[in-house]
Each structure stands twice: as C-alpha cells, then as structure tokens.
Length: 281
Ligand SMILES: [Zn+2]
Image (cartoon, rainbow, N blue to C red):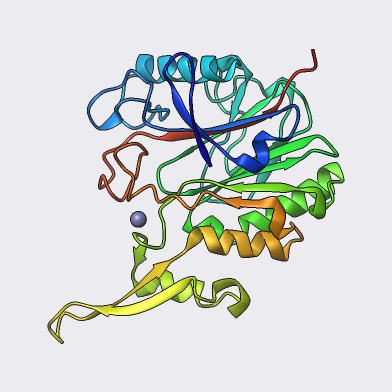
C-alpha cells in the first residue's frame, strides 16, 4: 500500500494493484486529517463510539473531499460479523449517514453502478477490497475473526460471480490493515475454531504456544494471521495470486496513526474503507 496526502491534509492508504485500475476509486483512512480529539483523534468515522456526531460528519466531509466525492455518495454496511453481502445501487445512497440503514445483518457491499461508494468501518478487523475491471464491479467486505473463519473472502467472490457474472480470475483483491499475527493473540476458545479449518488454509497462520512462567498459570495462547487466512480463502475461491495485494500492516503495532481496538482496549475511533466506480465524465 502507499500513503497518500491529499491537498486538505487528509492522509489515506491505497493499494498499488487497485489504484492502477481505470475508473475505480478506493481508500483506507488513517487517523490523520480529522477534527476529533482524545481517543478519537483525529479522523474517527464511528457514530456510536462516544465522539460527537458533528465531528464524525466533518471527518466524513474531509475524507470525501480528499477523494473528490460527496458524503451523500456513500453507502454503509450494518456490520454484524456475518458473511452476508448486499447488492446496492443509487437508491441506497446516503444509507448510514443521511438516512438510517434500511437493512441489517450484512458485512459486505457490492455494486456495478458508478457513483455509488461502498463504505465499511474498522479497528483491527480485516478490510477486503474487491474490483473487477472487466465487468466493472466493486465490493468491500468486513472480516473480523469470525468473518475470516467463515470464509468472507470466498463468499464475496461467489456473490460477485452469481450476482454480476464476475469471473474470479478477473478479480483484484486488496487486503487492508488489520491486527497482525504479531498482536492477535487468542485463547483456546477461539483457536480451536480456527483449527477446524482445512490445513491448507491455516498452515503457519495459527501458531500456538504456552504463556506464563509458573506451571499453575500456564495458558495455551495462539497467534492468528487473519490476513493470510483471508488470502488463502481468496485463492481457493479462484482469485489469482498475482492479483492480490496484502497491506501487511498491523493496526495494533501502528496505533499512533491507525485505530486499533486491542491496542486501545476499546477506547478508539473507527477507520473507513471506501471503494466505488467513478461516474463517467
Ligand atoms: Zn502487531
């Protein structure tokens, strides 16, 4: 990924593989360029985190200005750690900002309509950006550990194939910043669920060790590589390795400029992933 500084001082990240595709616009926000303070400083997109609504709206305005789009061009997802994907269009513009979400229980958005910008929020979960430059379709999917484990990556590929006729081999995928294997330590309750996945998916992505010095306190802990597991599921669903870019950025290690739920013990704002097809001029 590359870091872009917009003319209004908003800083965001872009994938190299997606930014060369004509007519497709995308970005992943950072904490830099907004108006929020304290734990939300400065670019928080979450309405329900304790920040003021005015601040969030101003952050959205600045982020959209940096991308040369309008806040009213955005459509948000409800994000409930499901693997449900929803097709949206012009009729959904402004959902989640200017009007309430009309549907709940979905974590992915897809569209083939220019001018409809798909938005999802993050603070450690994995953002998955999809683009098909042939069929002119984009999607974004939110994959926390549950979504990752439930193959949100593959579900999105199959949704794009059935809904829009996208061929997996034409898809480009960007796997954005999320909590890395370095910092995503989980207990056995979570790890045991990942170990049920095929070996080809979890190989070297679930590393288990015992922590604690005293025998009595010893606990089995595992470090899980969510980015790698999403990549493996995407490959399994037919996306070409050469078309996948993994940001390889840990939000927890970089919590000074990216929001991390774990690093902040939940006192944090939310980052925003956006992708859409540009309106024809
Ligand atoms: Zn880390």
